[in-house]
Image 1: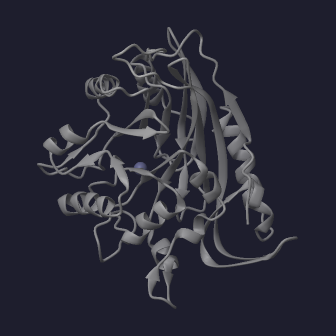
Image 2: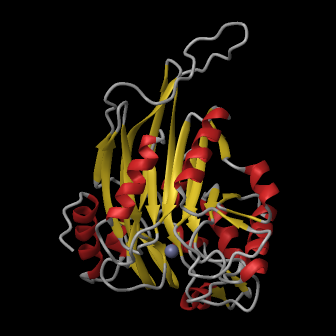
Image 3: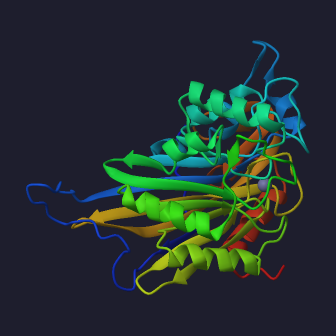
Length: 373
Ligand SMILES: [Zn+2]
């Protein structure tokens, strides 16, 4: 069944003059000609793994953990993007699987995120050190074994030096993905492991390095802000302004477990879009504002050798916990107990409840920046 996720809010980015990139438009004998193209990047928020999710993912009949079906209603958006990114907010430390406050999810969680269409999982978040050195290193090993690109944590400084920044070729466009967290919940990151923390001087160096390596787009994924606050904190605004001043193309925030606004930061040469928080992608959090999230779809165009973000579009979805049994005009839908990400276009499948409509109303209001909370 195909669902076409209609955006609730579409923001078109109109640069004030030109983009910060200065890629050559035409080549000579030594310069490659960069053809005009358009790419779409989708970013999702926090992939949590609370214990009830682990329990719900267990398929008794085949004795496996299975997650892919939870994402079937958002999968078309994810798999059709040229690049899809999310935040893995759990370690993959093996058994015993644990939920809050120190997470370890089954490896199948990451594997199924790849099957859904995610290409990159960022790991700089406040739970990356939940299981110490073993957790940091095993998570990297598992992601590598599944051929999932990742950035934000490293086994050694040498590994960071050789792999960072993560630059991905997206239809010929070089896109740098950076990942930073405000903290690791007070848990130590033991040497020689490295986690990318929010630090002005390091971020400035990383951005410059990404450009020096040819990145046409630089997108930092920021783990920041106060939990459960539907407006950004001044520290987030300050950091976003700093990143914009260093020439990033778009900023995507996570961590508060609720949505926060989309805003635009004016620089001398550009208007940089920032979404301060995408909320939960999937989590066992049922309170108002916490029971859903949004994806952000970034459209970037390269014209005459210059690449710039031209649209920044949000796609909210509600996380439904339960089973679904519904008859639609085309087919009947019957789904076992789980945590289903439901965009508004599929909300008619949900059993009658005021929660989903309220979530979508809240999402529109918060993302537009009109939240009073
Ligand atoms: Zn977090």
